[in-house]
Image (tube, rainbow, N blue to C red):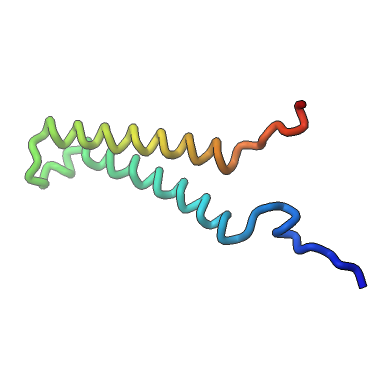
Length: 84
């Protein structure tokens, strides 16, 4: 009988890893959404002053963008291993 390796082993990714990669992207989008929420007037019901609220919103948006880009580059961008 043939000793075949499972597809997940040949591809190097399991379903748990793929779930984690997509979860990381979703979390980055949630951070950006929270930042945009803090920028809007809807969040004025919070007891934070407008300047501090907008600054915190900007931090969340920037962090979300950085996290999204890094996650995409590490887990979804095709690597050029054949170039060498």
